[in-house]
Structure formats: structure tokens, C-alpha cells
Length: 333
Image 1: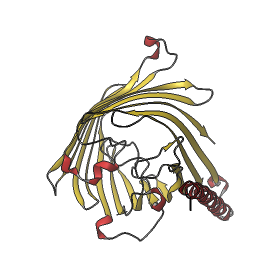
Image 2 (image 1 turned 90 degrees about the vertical axis):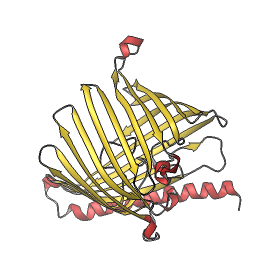
Image 3 (image 1 turned 120 degrees about the vertical axis):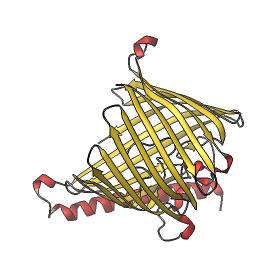
């Protein structure tokens, strides 16, 4: 069968899966509605964002890409909710399709999980996100997934402990919802402690088992003003003597200084990754290569009325440079 036809059939199948997931979520919500009180009414919500971008790397031809991210969820009560995530792209950290290409017409459901929240923290189980909140530079891609269980326990003094136990068996998006098809090398385990020290200082420390590798991770963040943060992150692979280090800053600038009506958000960092760090580094956000590298990104509101933003980013790693520029539209209900 023609590859183009196969990919179009794959897209149609993915859309069908998304519709089935929504039907299941809605029917489950309806079934529970009769047992909930008026204060715990069932609510369906959804979010969609669409991104168009220009991608120009120094080691390959430029390309134009698009991305769809769809987040449906059903709140069953004050404590319980169901969630899914459907996105373009075919890999763990890849969420874009290339315009005009005959073999990148991808759209797959990557997550399906239940969440329970209380005053003590939250619990998630199923095909869950890779993160509990903010995504770190050394963390796994925010478009990825883990099959398993997460519990975040709130502690005293603005601190928390997170435990994740599960499996990362396949890095291809069309297998994200497969369960029980991995082996012992695919086991995933993480214990993380995070805390705030006043209004300016925060840190995280964790131990991980990912893709047969053992890692120690530490992060420190310093909010030196209301809109600006310095951060330092380090991940040590203890079974292979390899390291990843990141130092950077993020925050907000006044748009009026350059004649723009809205504030400009910025994100910049330097990173170094040892060649022997392993597959884990390839599953982080926007991996480009090992060695010394850096990235600078600026973004801002293009139109508040239409929920549209713009962004420009420049990356460089090991002699390879990349320019990204585009717009993003968001829809919420």
C-alpha cells in the first residue's frame, strides 16, 4: 500500500481514537453524575493550541512545521478527574509535523490517566505526564509519557516529595497507550524532594532509574526579582560517570522599551552534556546534540483578543545552529 495513504489512514485512526477517548470520558462522567452532589458537579473542559513555526538548522534544509496539542479532561468531583492528551508528531520528544512532507502526517493520543487531589497532594495513574508541574531543562519532554503511578505528597514548610513508579517501554507515539509490552530494562523509578526557602529560593533533588541508567538530579532556582529567575541544574549518571549541566535565566522584559505593547518573556541557558550520558538526554525537551550548547528565546502576546503569541529562538550545540520562529493560537473551554 502507498506510504502516503498509510499515513493518512493512520491520521484518521488517531482522530477516531481521540473521539473514542472523549466518548469514554463523557460517558464515564455521565455515569458518575448521578452519585455526585451539586457541589461536586461533573464538568468537561478542553484546551487546544496550534503552533506554526519555521525551523532552519545549519546542517539540513529549512522546513515549515505545525503542531496540534489537545487536552480534554472531565472533572468527576472535587477530588477525582480524568485526563487525556492528543498531539501531532511521532516521537517521545517530537510534537511537530512538517508541512508538505508525505510521511509525517501524525496525530496520536499519548496519555490517558486518572487524577486524585486532596489537601495532602495528588495521585495520578495510567499513562501519565512526565512532570508534576513546571518542566525543567534537565527533565523529560513535556510531550512524553510514562505508564505507571505518581504520588506527590505535600509536606510542611512549602516542601513536597514525589514518587513515580512505572515503565517507559516505547519512545514512539503510536505505541504510547500500549501497556505491558516492555521488559525489565524499561522500568521507570523516581523519587524527588522539592522545597521553597522563602519567596526567592527553591530547590529539587531526585534519584531516577530511566532506560537502564541510574541518575542523580539537583536543581536550584533563585528569584532575584518578581519577574526574573536564575537557575542551575545538574544530572549525574552514576552508572556511567557522565553528566549534564545547565545554567540559565528566565523572566520578563518591558515591551515598551522596544516599541511593543506587551511584555516580552525570555528564556536563555548554557548547557553541557557528556557524550556518554545515554538515551535519557535524547528524551529531554528539544534535544539538539551533546557537548557545549546554548539557547535564547523571546516570546510575547501578538493578540490578546485572539489568544495568539509569537516566539523567536536560537539554539547552538556542537557547531550546529538552529533558528525557530513562529506563532501559537490557544483555545480554552
